[in-house]
Image (cartoon, rainbow, N blue to C red; front, top):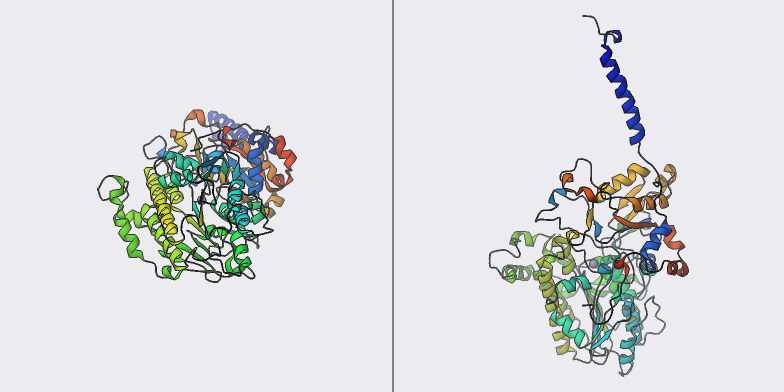
Length: 585
Ligand SMILES: [Zn+2]
């Protein structure tokens, strides 16, 4: 059989082939990957101007050159990174619950600061002037007479004024920090925290306190509590940072290692001042929270301060004993006790049906769930009380500093969203532990001899369905950035992009162009091609932008107080951190 030659193809086929070739060439031209910043994309100055001075101040304070990712992203209010999520949940009664909260907006930035302690905190006082969590450490330095303590934060005058009338500092300064316990979470469950309310009424409540910097991320803010300075100064940009060898790593090396905390905390300086007579102690969830107490024995002249963290995989209290000391009472973890509390979870939700808010006992024992229940709250309360007793906190005249971090409201919020009833129940359990701690202090130290501070490291992310928001698919975002700029992304976190310096230079990419592109990036672009559930994305929303902006390290570093002031109020109501008058609650 003779091979079919071209001359034998019918003319019609040739015409079709020719048209197809033209279409293919045209398509290749049109669909050729676009590179660089799109025409008309916003400049860094334009994005900063839209965000306004207050927010840009927070962003500059929170960004640590060389350690933060080189490109900071600012998702619009109620937009946030969640990894690869399932679009088929859209519009159903089971929305995608996982969330992240590092956004700079007021709903994550506004937190309570409440001080209680007759003699040290004025009773029944509400303060509306703006302050932030960096104010606590310098306030304590003032109360303790610790001269020369340097901090970014301004001390709380009302506390210093009152405290200076006392002849001596309190025997204990007890810090009760609720992870993810910002005002937006408290407001959502107004009846779940009677103890906090009562201590506020009997003490001093700062209505317009914020976390003082952005992003609102745990690892950074606990170090702000401890040091009284912002991340730019204390060096902890978040939960991860670019380490000494250039690789992004856990900020505490996943081993409670304090080497990246650049400055001492007020607690360790006080410890030093008293020849390590003072007890400095924490019960927390993980290394990220050690910024409250400091370096322990890592610091020259420091001793092993008391610390207990939870190792979820092993179901035990632990600490890096090179630098810290685990309370003896926690050396053997009493898991039976935790399980006995878990057995009683069922009845807490109002229905004795073998579950706690539809979660089975088996589910609630999993390491990824266990720390998010009221049972774990009570178990942590036990560890706190055990530690207070073992070290006789407040038993002598050398002031002891204790810092506890209650992880559970945040943990529950990440699992079930702050809108879920689980978070309200966890909050109520957390409040009950505060009551228990106060009772212990009353008994062992006596009212009038202690100061309690209650605060939080951030608020939480409500369901985007309630606020016209959207979840950002982190992987698709990274794919889109790389399709446009080449293989320049080392890592995308919920906060920032770590960029590959070599790839930037070989691709000839200016990070400021990536920032501008992010300013144009739309919801539609973030829907992966062919993803299941893509048809459920409302057509009218595809052109919505997802980001208010993105900024390079270089740009943030270039900002002076004058240029920041020139940004004014900005365009977003969520960039206003203050509430007027009475009710921030
Ligand atoms: Zn947190």
